[in-house]
Image 1 (cartoon, rainbow, N blue to C red):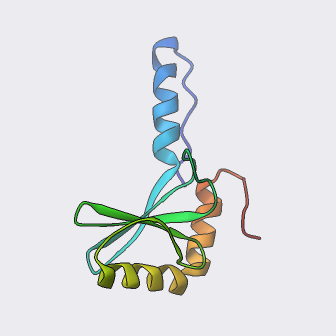
Image 2: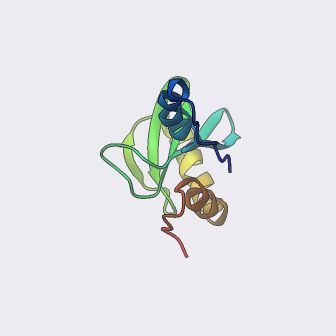
Image 3: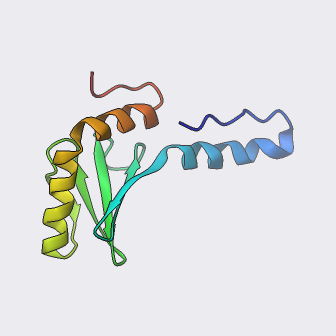
Length: 107
């Protein structure tokens, strides 16, 4: 996990929130053209989830069930994305916990 240095210079402090935001997002996989990205702090849903992106469309899936929370992609790709989440459950739980900065959802 990336740990950003805290900036001491006043002109650099404004960048801290940008680096913090970037560090809370993590691309964790790609399969069959589907990109899997974890965002741990978002408005509207903070429970463990993953974004699956395919051809400029996106679906948000629950970790670990693979159940669709929101969004829509090609139905064949959505099924593959859901299966990928279930198959990679342990890895995704670990990555979520790492990216959530000490807020553990999975023990």
